[in-house]
View 1 (cartoon, rainbow, N blue to C red):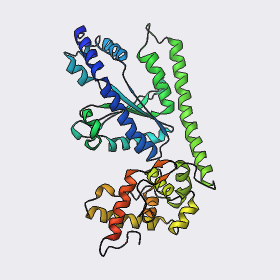
View 2 (cartoon, one colour):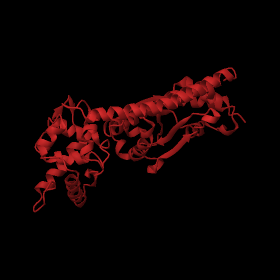
View 3 (cartoon, helix red, strand yellow):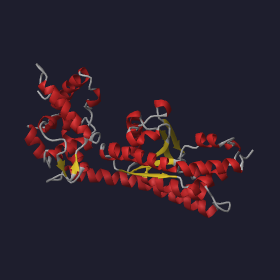
View 4 (cartoon, rainbow, N blue to C red):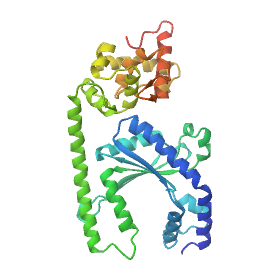
Length: 356
């Protein structure tokens, strides 16, 4: 039985009052993803955010009112049942990065009441049936530490976060408007045929982009001179640490090098006396033990990441201001935290230097 026009009017009015809250939530989630995934882990992707317009919300309610599985009795049930008032999309350049992004999303956010994030892998890919939809949907809530200050009123509000490749996003969006929300009874056979053709093109595009980025990495590895960006930084140091994924926490390591004015692999090796994976892993192991023993588990390092570079640079950052600038940016608070804990370790009575 369709739900009433009174419920639709009440829900629409409430959304008009609360929309600013969802705008703030979408922006906050997008900012966290940008800082931690795109910049922090050097993932090539685009983060976008949006909130439903009041007109779009009304249209959705009108469609739902004709569905037997959406029989909302009141306005509260509408808001409990719809999770995409705020939306964020992470569109990766390569489909191979989607799972990695999903893992990071589950680390950065939580589900209701601090539980695990609800992940729904909507992989409907079936070229034989002309079906090419592929995206991972995550319903995320901000963690308690991200609800401080002006974000306190976002407690209990959720955001739909979608992860897909850029090429998959092209097909998903067009098919959503033409196939999922058809006007006039479509799509007709011609439209379906063209959607299928587009689907095959997007799959070919995914493969081409992957090969293009692999070729780019090969070229960067042989490049000389100063680092051009964090991706160049990762590519040119990867051979020094073959067992680690240098993309993880790359932004932090790159910031450390930039703060010290180290613009090339040779400059880094000259300052630290050479880069050796075994030595860096040993330094991390000793440093992490100190951090945990002193109740600073929040400042531990990951020995399978670009922290292998960071740990070699930390001794050289002691004494430098946390507001030192490089490339016009104030360096990360996380890096400043690591420097502070490293300093405590080095000055602890009887402590073996972590870099020894």
